[in-house]
Length: 219
Image 1: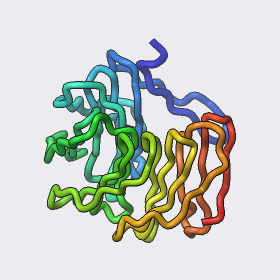
Image 2: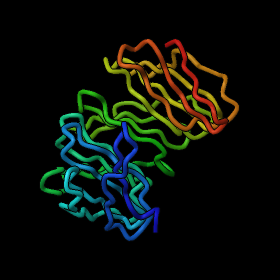
Image 3: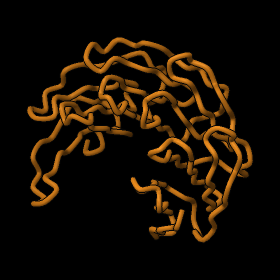
């Protein structure tokens, strides 16, 4: 039962503020809208739920995926939800709950998903490649090839010039967003890379791994 609920905690005090109940399957992903108005969750029950952040009330339940909803991303303007379910990505209006478009991706499974800071592009990692999609025109702009194993984590620099990927083969790669060229390979983890992020100033890459370490790299 614990895996089917969402808990909201006070960052400073550690106090439990609210518990959100409604999903009938395990919750795999949650996201908070930039204006702190909504919490959005994706679940094993194949649904997406939109919650009022303050009250904890479930405002909407979005249905349409045929499998587990594994990843949830909210656009930086707070208007859209991007959800991922294996080979399928859907874009929803966060207020109305209407599904605006569906991307059918020719991959085995999508392992990581992110939206660019200007909300123009969706980038996801799959089997051993990275795909960049134009959100407005619904087209795949580029496929980045060169990974030996699954791409497990994705980050985009704030200026939109670079993509950083983490892989199950313990390697981190830095890519040029426009050309798709691999610019650098970072090695040092002894386990699969779980997550990657880029500092706002673009100076550092931060990675976490199943080897139980966090590494900070000079970009």
